[in-house]
Length: 202
Image 1: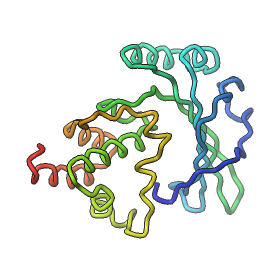
Image 2: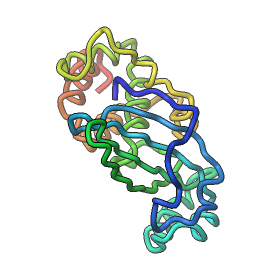
Image 3: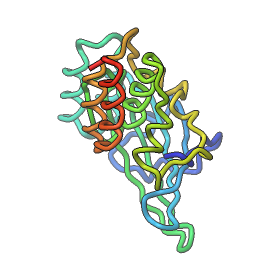
């Protein structure tokens, strides 16, 4: 995550993503490239914004989409986020492609569906800022093998992530910790929880 950056061009062949009509790719939001979890793997991730009606028309996962639409009825200006992934082995050139969808905007307590890590970290970072804590320092303390002072933590304030996230005036500490645990960041949740306890927030 700490080595990710944006791309301005799209190298994917849209027809390679089965189960999605090409019109679903009309409203592209962002392209990111970052190292994969497998050695010598690079991932290109592209985000698209779909209205509920477009999601119904252009995405084959009908039951899943209807569940997300029902869930989103209580949200203000809800939409469906389509994410495509192109994972390339830089040695062999082998490419794996898949895609996923998620409800937006992200609200605290929604937890993990495989696409919400950035939203959860953005909220936890905002909580830390509101309480005078250094979230990147806590990330380094929790995961020294993954993060260091040399890393650029600007992704915690990425405008596209914040735009698809409901940021309360006062971020709920209990929900922030719960969401971190939900994305398996238990050590980070513990470190942040200790600091919040020490200053009387929880």
